[in-house]
Each structure stands twice: as C-alpha cells, then as structure tokens.
Image 1 (cartoon, protein in one colour):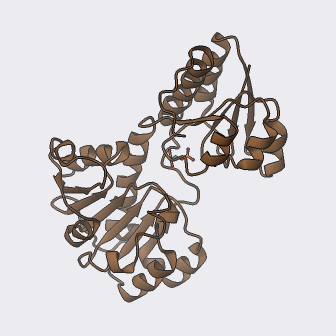
Image 2 (spheres, protein in one colour):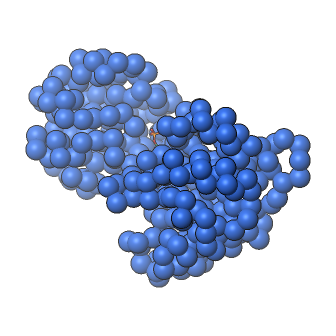
Length: 305
Ligand code: 3PG
C-alpha cells in the first residue's frame, strides 16, 4: 500500500518523520510531494496512491479519476471544502478530516491578529485593550472553543452563536449563547469567524450583518475567505473607517483592500493558522493513524462523505 503526502504548504519535518513512522510500522510505503506549483505534478504523483494526506490541497474529480488505486483521502485539518466529496463518494473513496488537531494553533493566531488590530497595526498611536470587550464567536466548534478558553485569560465577555451546537454545551464553558448571527454581531466589539465554507455560508458575512457591529469593531477571520461577501466588505469598510478586518486568508480583492482601506486591514501573506510544528504533528500523525486503521481494520470514524 502506498500512502502519499501531497502538501503545497509542507508540514514541519518532525511531522513528516512521525507520519513516516506510522505508515512504515504498518508495512506501507510513504511518498511525498511538497511545494508543487502545477496541478499536473499532483496528477502524476497520485496515480498509484492507495491513500493521500492533504492540507488545503485541491482534490477534485480529475485527481480522483487518475488515482485508480485510491481508497482514502485524509485532510489533515478541519475544513474539507477543498475535496470534491461527490466525486470521491462516486468512486468509492473515503474522505476524512482530523477534527480538533490544529484547533489550538488557529485559536492562538486569532489573538495574534487581534492584538495587532486593536493596537492599530503597531503604528505608534494609542490603541485599545481586549480586557472587558465583548467577543462574539461565530460557530462553536473546536477552534471556537479554544478561542473562548484563551479569551477568558484576556478578561473578555464571551458570546457565541452556533446554529448546530446546543446552548448547554456553549454555556457550560461560561460563554453566553445567543439565538442568531444578527444578535451576535449587534452585541460584539469583536467577532471571530469559525464557520465552514458551505453552500449556505458562502458570502453570508455581508454588509447588513457587519453594520450591526458597534463603533471600533473588529472582524477576525481564520476560517475561509469564501464566507465573506468581499465586494460588500470593502464598500462597508470605506463607509466605516472605525471598522477593522484582519484575516488569515487573503481575499480575492486583497490589492484593492490594501489600496482603499489600508489603515483598517491586514492579511497574512499565506494561511498560517495551522502552521505550527505542534499542529503539523497532531494533524499529520492523526491522519496517518486514521489511514492505517481504515486500511487495516476498516475503521471509518471521522469519515465525512
Ligand atoms: C483547516 O481547515 O484545518 C485549516 O484551515 C488549516 O489549513 P492548512 O492545513 O492549509 O494550514
């Protein structure tokens, strides 16, 4: 059996070594494609793969079609919007993610971005503090929970909205559950986005929602760029010079944002939320263990299709 790691954005070496140890202990072979620039490199590499470990790498119908031996794809991370689930299911390929494994890394970056924003991007002027501010967590999954845990240390008032998470689960963490996204945005000085990119959520963060946020508000996005209505966002930010947007996923209109709302906007040059050696080890080794357990024992826990 051949397990393939296909990562445009490579794991730390320690994570690759850990994955190799898991795969080889099961008697399987490990192959690696990193920092590829052309889709053809991926297509050529996966032709004889039985299993593929990916990050944000795109696994579409064409990739699935050329990989005739493919049995399982594991997205080492949370979001699997980069995998064509329908094509995988049609080809009998199991798709999994590794929920929670990189959640702390992403949550810590939320606060890195927030401090940078509320201190006016370190431009020397007086900023504000996080203590006492109302933080709205939009979706209370693994990352949202870690954000809440860290926010307590900052002395923030914490609110959350999640259409699928029961109120008692949210409130047992000392977080106030609110009934709608509209209510969350109306209350919060800061909103941290943790919704997945789905047909329902794409472009759902729009001007009418953001306009509810109080003066001096900050939106921090470590989730997906697709959930933002980027055309409405830039116009909204021009009309609200007090509002800041900080993100770990550059919007398609990054150049226009830098030109028109430079003092209110920051994006990391490359998605960095899960890019720590700890998260790479956690997610990468979980992916390897899940593949071995699936191929050897047929365990389908964490299957998403
Ligand atoms: C995730 O969905 O797990 C994060 O967005 C991390 O993505 P990455 O593995 O491409 O850094």
